[in-house]
Image 1 (cartoon, rainbow, N blue to C red):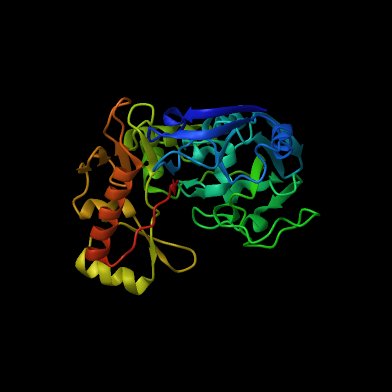
Image 2 (cartoon, rainbow, N blue to C red; image 1 turned 60 degrees about the vertical axis):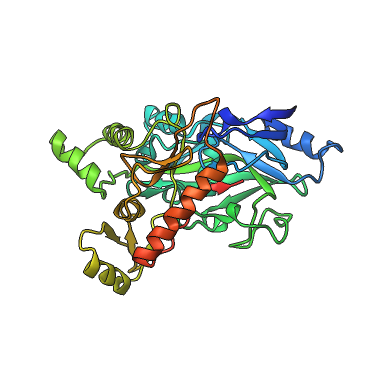
Length: 358
């Protein structure tokens, strides 16, 4: 277990915000978590789990104990007649894990290519893109209860997945049960740390082409039934064309969740704004494109301090500062709140941020 003090976090968050961790522990195995819990200097401290730092906005130095998840490993855990069950360490880079599964001949994660961050953060956020969410390919995860040190396993129902949501994003009223059982909807934020994630990848795979951008790529290629590798390549091309590379322009990806409204609300908005981008959902609600709403309010390319709205995709807020003079978390959140106000005043819709504000 490696314990460090006063650690700069600028390179550990994709926004490139300058901040420090009072204490940072690098977790490279489950044993490191157990050693941490047995260290009297560190016990009972509030914790903040840090993966790839791709979904956070740091508004100051981090006082809770930072657990930097660096557990590696990719393996086929089990094969059945119907599926492959693949296990990945929480510290694996998500995109690299997706590429590995395809290289091994296990399709299913290709629509989630190039999403920044680590494997351990994927179920926390229930990441999703181009018609697929993590919960659609999820088998189970292994986590350690930070109160007792006991490992436990959760299936999809116990993770209480929702749109960019899970049991790990909510405060915990109590610890997991001794046998590993967990009541659906019970919060685990700050009470458990994910060490491994398992995916169920079906052998009766079929391409997921529900999004217009992917259908355009299929038509351009003249392919009736694309392979998983082709979809992977197309998703990478689409994302690189639309979204800034955090290594070049600091950002946290999509900053706001796409809001859902009733059909009646959608018709009311269409009556005023016929071009609004909207998608019918299986439950009867309508999902609106948050980026379109923000763009319609005139925010694309605008700035507040060194925080800006990306000129190619209004859903992305970016760092227009430099490594030596970075954007602050305060500037990012001031811009975010101004956008929320504009969208609410025009459309009557409250946008909800995706990143965790620390």
